[in-house]
Image (cartoon, one colour):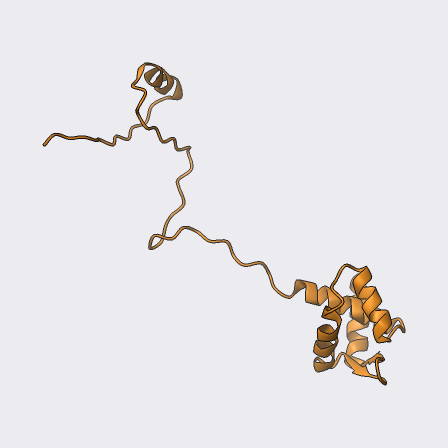
Length: 131
Protein backbone atom coordinates (compact mmCIF):
# COMPACT_ATOMS: atom_id res chain seq x y z
CA UNK A 1 0.00 0.00 0.00
CA UNK A 2 1.42 3.37 -0.99
CA UNK A 3 1.53 6.58 1.05
CA UNK A 4 -1.55 8.70 0.36
CA UNK A 5 -0.84 11.75 2.49
CA UNK A 6 2.27 13.42 3.89
CA UNK A 7 2.34 16.39 6.25
CA UNK A 8 5.48 18.51 6.02
CA UNK A 9 6.49 21.52 8.10
CA UNK A 10 9.35 23.86 7.16
CA UNK A 11 10.32 27.52 7.47
CA UNK A 12 10.65 29.60 4.30
CA UNK A 13 10.67 33.33 3.57
CA UNK A 14 7.25 34.63 2.56
CA UNK A 15 8.38 35.65 -0.97
CA UNK A 16 9.70 32.15 -1.68
CA UNK A 17 6.54 30.60 -0.27
CA UNK A 18 4.32 32.73 -2.50
CA UNK A 19 6.27 31.69 -5.57
CA UNK A 20 5.82 28.01 -4.56
CA UNK A 21 2.08 28.49 -4.10
CA UNK A 22 1.80 30.26 -7.44
CA UNK A 23 3.19 27.23 -9.30
CA UNK A 24 1.82 24.54 -6.97
CA UNK A 25 -1.07 22.15 -7.16
CA UNK A 26 -4.52 23.65 -6.58
CA UNK A 27 -5.70 20.95 -4.14
CA UNK A 28 -3.01 21.49 -1.52
CA UNK A 29 -4.09 22.54 1.97
CA UNK A 30 -2.04 25.26 3.64
CA UNK A 31 -2.01 26.26 7.31
CA UNK A 32 -0.20 29.46 8.25
CA UNK A 33 1.09 30.32 11.70
CA UNK A 34 2.63 33.59 12.79
CA UNK A 35 5.58 34.11 15.09
CA UNK A 36 3.46 33.52 18.20
CA UNK A 37 3.17 30.01 19.52
CA UNK A 38 -0.31 28.51 19.62
CA UNK A 39 -1.85 28.47 23.11
CA UNK A 40 -0.94 25.52 25.29
CA UNK A 41 -3.56 22.90 25.86
CA UNK A 42 -3.79 21.07 29.15
CA UNK A 43 -5.53 17.72 28.97
CA UNK A 44 -7.06 18.71 25.65
CA UNK A 45 -8.62 21.93 26.99
CA UNK A 46 -7.71 25.38 25.76
CA UNK A 47 -7.25 28.45 27.97
CA UNK A 48 -10.37 29.84 29.62
CA UNK A 49 -11.25 33.37 30.62
CA UNK A 50 -11.64 34.19 34.28
CA UNK A 51 -15.18 34.93 35.41
CA UNK A 52 -16.04 38.60 35.84
CA UNK A 53 -15.62 40.09 39.31
CA UNK A 54 -18.69 39.69 41.45
CA UNK A 55 -20.26 42.16 43.82
CA UNK A 56 -19.15 45.37 42.14
CA UNK A 57 -22.67 46.56 41.32
CA UNK A 58 -23.83 45.66 44.83
CA UNK A 59 -21.02 47.79 46.26
CA UNK A 60 -21.96 50.80 44.15
CA UNK A 61 -25.64 50.27 44.96
CA UNK A 62 -24.76 50.14 48.65
CA UNK A 63 -22.77 53.38 48.27
CA UNK A 64 -25.73 55.03 46.51
CA UNK A 65 -28.16 54.00 49.25
CA UNK A 66 -25.76 55.06 52.02
CA UNK A 67 -25.41 58.49 50.39
CA UNK A 68 -29.19 58.90 50.07
CA UNK A 69 -29.91 57.76 53.64
CA UNK A 70 -27.02 59.86 54.97
CA UNK A 71 -28.34 62.97 53.24
CA UNK A 72 -31.68 62.54 54.99
CA UNK A 73 -33.71 60.74 52.34
CA UNK A 74 -34.46 57.54 54.23
CA UNK A 75 -37.92 56.74 52.88
CA UNK A 76 -38.21 53.56 50.85
CA UNK A 77 -40.02 55.29 47.96
CA UNK A 78 -37.28 57.93 47.70
CA UNK A 79 -34.56 55.27 47.81
CA UNK A 80 -36.32 53.19 45.16
CA UNK A 81 -36.67 56.25 42.87
CA UNK A 82 -32.97 57.09 43.26
CA UNK A 83 -32.01 53.51 42.44
CA UNK A 84 -34.17 53.46 39.30
CA UNK A 85 -32.78 56.84 38.24
CA UNK A 86 -29.25 55.44 38.54
CA UNK A 87 -30.05 52.58 36.20
CA UNK A 88 -30.52 49.73 38.66
CA UNK A 89 -33.53 47.47 38.88
CA UNK A 90 -36.11 48.52 41.46
CA UNK A 91 -36.16 44.90 42.66
CA UNK A 92 -32.59 45.20 43.95
CA UNK A 93 -33.48 47.75 46.67
CA UNK A 94 -35.02 45.27 49.13
CA UNK A 95 -32.05 42.90 48.94
CA UNK A 96 -29.55 45.75 49.28
CA UNK A 97 -31.40 47.10 52.33
CA UNK A 98 -31.52 43.61 53.85
CA UNK A 99 -27.75 43.18 53.37
CA UNK A 100 -27.05 46.66 54.75
CA UNK A 101 -29.20 45.95 57.82
CA UNK A 102 -27.39 42.64 58.32
CA UNK A 103 -24.03 44.44 58.05
CA UNK A 104 -25.38 46.90 60.66
CA UNK A 105 -24.92 49.92 58.36
CA UNK A 106 -28.56 50.99 58.58
CA UNK A 107 -31.49 50.38 60.91
CA UNK A 108 -35.23 50.68 60.52
CA UNK A 109 -36.69 53.98 61.79
CA UNK A 110 -40.34 53.14 61.34
CA UNK A 111 -42.24 51.45 58.56
CA UNK A 112 -40.46 52.19 55.25
CA UNK A 113 -37.94 54.58 56.84
CA UNK A 114 -34.26 53.90 57.46
CA UNK A 115 -31.44 55.66 59.29
CA UNK A 116 -27.68 55.21 59.42
CA UNK A 117 -26.15 53.42 62.39
CA UNK A 118 -22.83 54.53 63.88
CA UNK A 119 -21.07 52.02 61.62
CA UNK A 120 -23.06 53.36 58.66
CA UNK A 121 -22.11 56.95 59.54
CA UNK A 122 -18.43 55.97 59.50
CA UNK A 123 -18.86 54.26 56.13
CA UNK A 124 -20.83 57.26 54.81
CA UNK A 125 -18.11 59.69 55.89
CA UNK A 126 -15.42 57.43 54.40
CA UNK A 127 -17.30 57.37 51.10
CA UNK A 128 -17.72 61.15 51.14
CA UNK A 129 -13.95 61.56 51.63
CA UNK A 130 -13.11 59.17 48.76
CA UNK A 131 -15.55 60.11 46.13
